[in-house]
Length: 177
Image (cartoon, rainbow, N blue to C red; front, top):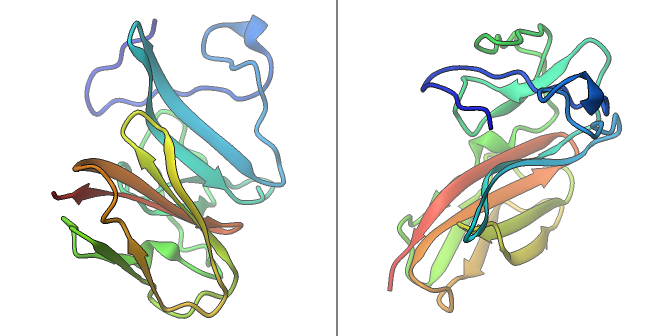
């Protein structure tokens, strides 16, 4: 098991070469995009810590959070393994990080406002804290405001990921009552 102090970085190589050591994972990330997650396994089950649907990868770029620890993901021109990410304003065609969810906490209807009409369809997934997919929905091109009935959800914390091939936005909501 690898333990990390707060505010530290750990480089994991998704290179399919696990024989090189514990920091080399036994899978590769797909160049044309995909999904990857981080989970913690306990005697009581598997708990998902974070996940990401990432877009098609470009040569000599990385895809990471900026600023570190935020919900904003960007193509990054400089690789900074073991250090904070550096954003050099590589343009994205559509930035889902401008998305606003309200009200939060929510009782019945969750509104999702996009900064501009969606240029392409997006996928919305709501997960429970243990990582179970609760809602999976496609949001159509041109959408500015999407409203979702969450009245039937149990009280608690949920994670929402909205993504398309070039951008991903993840945040959490608190469901009241």
